[in-house]
Length: 331
Image (cartoon, one colour):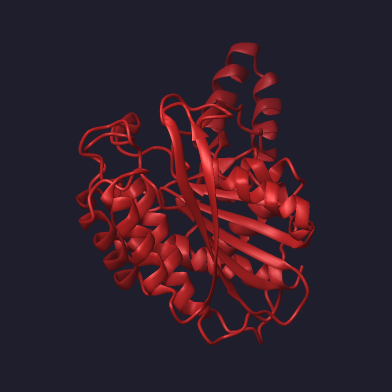
């Protein structure tokens, strides 16, 4: 589960002009016109007014293989439930490690105390070299919810993990022309009983604490969290808990690739695996679509299945993420 606080939308310049004009013709007209302008103004026309962060032309643009990413999602779903303590959880751990067998991989193993007992957990970290100092982290969680019968988490868990494995293919043998890129597969994101600061994000909280102690956190230039990114009806939240310059950077990348209509139609505050790192002043962004089915009807239900997903959504999120990395490289 993720906690959200609804935020008001930022009034654009166009909205202010419309409001001023309508005030000249009467208060009632002003209210109607301002409300209409607010409801219809596209995000890409100014909701995030920002100075562009250019990507150098000489830097090759990477693109994901969405069909291959989708196969990784399908493989995970075939394992069934992947909650802590289930056979599926061990299978998906082994699956991730097998896909990363040719990379530099570390495991952050620990025991977590939960409301239903102690569990062995493991964050998986794949490290890809860069040409500059610093680290760019791209992350996902790979566990699934335990409390719902027959929950296979096609979108919530598998989609972002499958895409992260595909992103690993794009950095294999090709150093990033910027900071190192670390791909992190978080364990224990889901709550066992009720989402809270102590019953959720076990893996990210543990790794944030570890990286705070050893100094790694200070080296992170950006942490990009992917979560629930496979929905056919894709609309990535404008998470106002995320770092603003990263939100602006992703919109620039989306606009460059022609995908701006899939981003930021809603503005909300999201509590997720990036939260422990935000508390350490690490620049973070949560790339998440938290409107899964009408009124989010598929989220955390047995209906979170493969038929609700689309390779196109994985393509959009994957390519925008890789383009954003290009921009972060030269920041």
